[in-house]
Length: 499
Image (cartoon, rainbow, N blue to C red; front, side, top):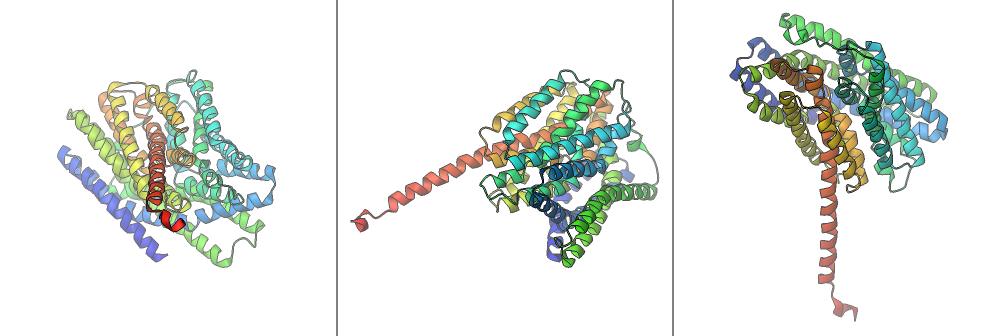
């Protein structure tokens, strides 16, 4: 266990250092406030510690719990109970996601509680649909096509302001708590299956859960009218550094506690009902994992909120104020390429993909594909901010390409790709890349809601294309290796020995 934690620390440190050095260099070049630079350095240290703790803790707590609950539900053989429990789990863990609260406070035309409830219902319904897919062996492609046809139809009637927010809601709701839990739940729900498609069905739960909020928020947009205003004071407050960290630490402590508590309560209920399922040793391990996860996520969010949000917003403004928009594009792409490797949910997903596929789809393959996709998505987002082009000109063609790729990419890559779409847009994206876009949009005098928002949506869409393209290349390469091995066997066969 200790060796795994040390390994996680090393990987995280190696990943964050290049990001930190690049941001510090640009900050010094443009004369960013030294207080913000110092805060950023402190926050980078907190990120390293926080991510290392979180990844380690989630692996020995939520991953185990999710898998055991999924297995227990399947073994009950009671369809109604399975559907009811998966729906409730979806609603509970979504309402607890801290990123969803941040998004909800930014839409002044909709009551915060209403948006959180609507998004949570969307996740609950589609997690229940995921269980139905596994139980009745429904085709993932068919469900995705029908779902996105519904989304395209709703886009024709929804207010322009709600479109970026609906897709962004899809990204933020599948966060660091829900991703590991839902991934493990999928493993548990498919544990009874021995057919060759069972491995494919292990993935796809996050994919379907990501669709739910898009549909429910777009429907909500038909009912609510009015213009939302955006308050940028969070990026420009001049509180003393110690005060900022203490205030954010207390806030994050409460948010993470509220975030983890529902999952822990679900665990306690499950443990009470299924007494013989979890041994005393496993129980101690899971409780320790919850504590480590709690500490890690609190430190991570504190560092990201204090040091990364302000400097991201200020750098975005300074690029525009110094008339360096052309340089903002490569900077955003490089940061996007690197920062996606640090996202907690992405690290969990990559590890799970490598484990379930027994190394045939490696972490490095996943990371490179996700990084390239994120870099391109950020480039398109910044171009959109500069030009004011509607997000629909990117989303509709992008999702059409993703749906077409489903028919030429292996099924398991399709499920992983759509799962990755719900994992890539995590806390670091929300606390640095989105503020970077908001700062640039604000300096340009654009509409923050229609121009800057939607960045998370494009980032979430990128893996749908890049991972499926990876699958297509993987498919071709595998066929070539098979043909090559057949040819070698024919050449090396000694016909004289057979006579």
